[in-house]
Length: 34
Image (cartoon, rainbow, N blue to C red; front, side, top):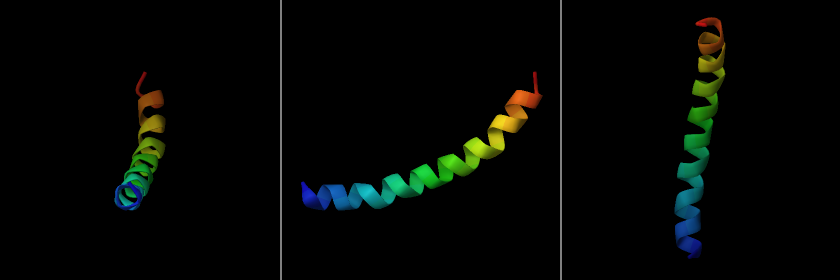
């Protein structure tokens, strides 16, 4: 279980980082679209 958590931690953090960047760039465009 510890090994799985360590493997998921890096991927989860990377995904959150990419999602945060995309979310910050998308909200303005989506809000301005309507």
